[in-house]
Image (cartoon, rainbow, N blue to C red; front, side):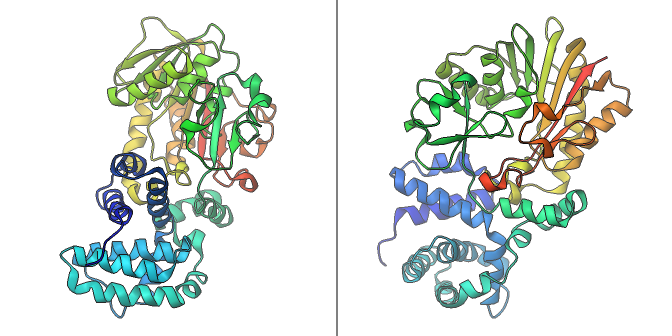
Length: 429
């Protein structure tokens, strides 16, 4: 047997952990790629993320070159071929090198008799796969069917196609500044451009920790859409605010930087440690509470609550391609129950006249528009405080007729898109 590059074996382990075991891509990538140097770590993450983004196309190409369907017991062989096909079709890796390392991976497992199958299929993909790839509607067939149908019904087929297209590209790096007034000072050092809403966007690569201003706490990473909810809360100086389901803490940092007295509540002590680390790095302060937000109550009623509710996260697929492979319709239904309970709990935390910002990073109506409609219909003590066009300069097309915000991955598409978010602003009656 020939020497097998460590990065290929780790890529297979990572892909298996994500696709077969349902583990989060970023968490597993951080864990499994530690033995590698930075360049190989980047390659492994890119390979696995690309395979997940393009899985529909990849499977269709593989199936085209199979004489008969592969039985379930050959799932490890298919996964090796998937990673190989991703390299050939989308990462411009020389075909002969991909074939050799992929066949060697099969031989190292218990399915060595099928190395000939992997060899034959990948050689055919190397020769003719691009022709098959280019015939496939990438936006449609890389989107799981249930999501495609839901988005077509909700947004129309043209917009669903644009959403699917947005998911095919790696998301750029979005930055929230501790002091928004210093934006002009950071565009040059960070090679970034300002976006509508106040975020900075860096298109070039590079390790976050090595970029100017990060270690000193001048900024943090946060998608442009995720930064909008706090910005729609207005002047926070001296306000008491709870950030419910707060981890990983970008909104907690925004609230604290805006002058609020912040209580960050999350039921995961492990995830709250990350919030604590970011607060320490940025020099900001907040009280951290490890508790279930449906049960926790503040000692005194608050001026405002920010509820970034647990959701299916289907609005973040461009940034987290594993989400498309992990979530199911049943997940949306179960999470909708939790969201309704959190909305009811938040009503008991806010002063009369106080504000609630409800948001989810989901494209599913059941986790956004339907939640607010149900809460108002059920008689919860909320009324809409409609968001106005002048509060969203450059993103006016994200406003709904009800005065909510619905960002889509295809918004700002000419500048790299943004996460899908639903945001509603309510007042306690």
